[in-house]
Image (cartoon, rainbow, N blue to C red; front, side, top):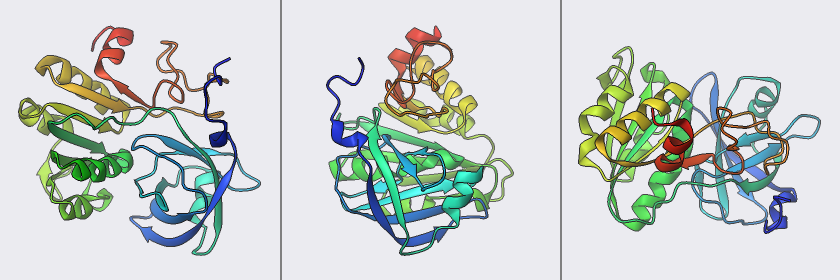
Length: 259
């Protein structure tokens, strides 16, 4: 059974209290949660957040320091709408962390790419990279300026920071993958999270330029531990909750046959 070797404590619910709420836009909010029980949580791993009476939802924190966890939530269904109605002082419950996160222990130059809401685990990863003292560029691609999430935070970390907007309302106009193609050869590693089309294009670019990459994919996750199979990646047998959500380019190229 897959659960052999699992730290059973992550299957048990714990809780935290909302200390602060940031409204990024009409559809995206960040919640700073003071956790009751510190757990090791790497950038790119996810938790299963639960509000009594509703289903669990998988969320990859946008920051965590052992006592304060930030989750960034896009409103797109009944459960996330309910999360958006939470207030300071409310409790939230969660299991986890689950899955494989971004590995950033290797020395080198990192290119961090967040597409839209996918910037959440990327900015947490940026904090970790700065702790190691590695060089990095943070690139966020969005449709329009008001969709940008963590540009100021990335700048505060001392990272080279680029905003790419599709409509040209701020930063560089165009698709974020077009910009990445211009600079990718200057980096040793690329870490990305965002829409599926963006991730597949990033994989193609990494293969073409010989850059190691790790990409975080989204799927419908229900159990979080690889039992139900709802989160299979492209009929490969790989499960996003168990084998991901972060996959490296060697695994992706092997199972997807290259892009």
